[in-house]
Image 1 (cartoon, one colour):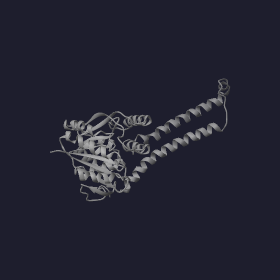
Image 2 (cartoon, helix red, strand yellow):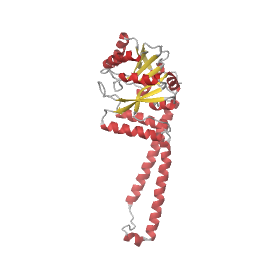
Image 3 (spheres, rainbow, N blue to C red):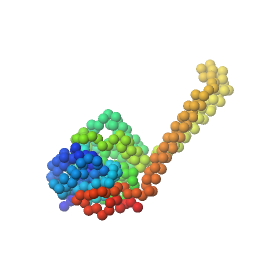
Length: 325
């Protein structure tokens, strides 16, 4: 009989976990599959780990890992994928914005033969600014990458075993899982759903974390920002040439330009504006190079992606991921 694995990253989720336990177990019967739930405690500082221990005692299908510190959402999901044993693996958040009731629809697509089934948000109940920024980011990413990045699709998805095995073999540290599952290929389909509000507690994914995730997605799957320096160089050079030509003719035909109200003037404002403009262009280009260089620096150090402090119901042979050097 096929097995379904549910991977759930958790960070300070004590207020929402009771609802998660109840709702997920309530809908599990509709899956018609044997299942396991792997929760990854990403360095929580509340009662999350104790509650996961208690849930395993009540239902051994619930298994958990605890990181030695907070390693980040994408790393927690990656660890869950690494230890998942199912023929299909569903990734969802603990805050119930990804409704467990929608898993049955993901499974239906999987049974049709699709290896990647991602949930697309047709409606979000986030603050206006976050909705606008998310809308702009997904469309910008789609334009800048050569991959067919789906719009408005988060981490809520189902992955076939063969896709999980490919993703486990990818060694990179700056993991943008939505991009990695697209990069893997295979047959992919989407399921629309309405993203609910957080069931309880406060959002753990802050604007800063969302911004870093967006940068990982952009710089991990596109080299277009590197070309931005070249494009800016051409534009600035073009404006400079036009400025030289304009100044040249302004000096030669001073009377004509004066009649048009464009008489030659000398002073510092133009020089200062030019210096500031060129300086900003240079800083932008240096910043882009720094983003790529920083990611290379993190990769070559070869440190473990995660360190496991404790586990429940899972056989752990090493405290860090075997992909580390």
